[in-house]
Length: 80
Image (cartoon, rainbow, N blue to C red; front, top):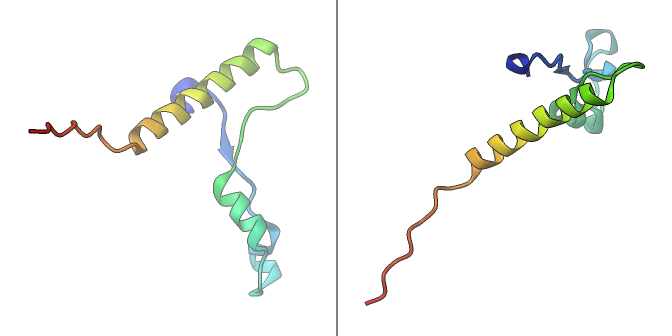
């Protein structure tokens, strides 16, 4: 995101994970969401062009991550 000048930030950590709430069972769903989510630019006067640019960056990053996670293509074995 930084390379594309998109101000993405980590998602907010659940309040139950802060010291003032002490050790307890926590909030497993909130913790799970916080571990997987990000904040993308959102403001009242974002233009359609800005929105499309951010969406394009997200799509490109997802495609790159998906391509990196796929195993290398296996050559077909010749049948003899």
